Image (cartoon, rainbow, N blue to C red; front, top):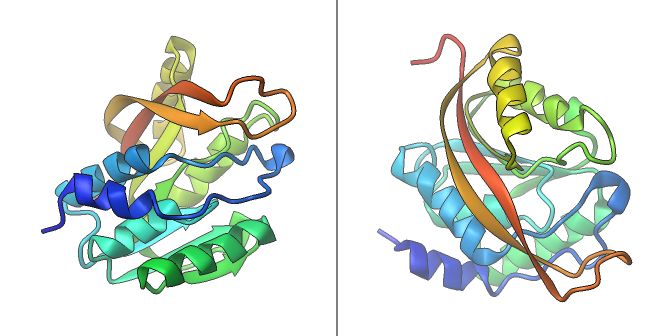
Length: 205
């Protein structure tokens, strides 16, 4: 079994999306955080041998991690064409196969075991985070999703998630390392407090 540290080393070799779009709140996840997220899903039996989808996949780091940990199929979707081109490059670099779609998440149909995602936080487009959660719960049994860490967000999601067909199993506080991405970023790196949620679709044991 691949160790989390080895997974993080492999993920650190991946290229970030070179042109993330502010209107879509695109940010690159650091390798250590991505390894922590997907390894948590792996330890819960939600990756190996499972059909996994990464909604808003960006550079593909979460989906690639799932493939490295034995997912039977990985699908990544992003509205940003430059992001998808980055996933193609990264998947070839580490020798994994990922199915890819350029488009809005609304076009996804079908059934998956697990959704992994770092959705937009909704700071630019109000409600887009809930759009991602709704789609994830429509198409998968288990969802791992990152959200801004604050008391108000936790209270909001605690109330909202049961209304859209999910149940919060647990949440875990994390810190993402975000590089200088947009014109208003002054520092080379930022540490951002987030919560990783494991959400189970209602009616799923």
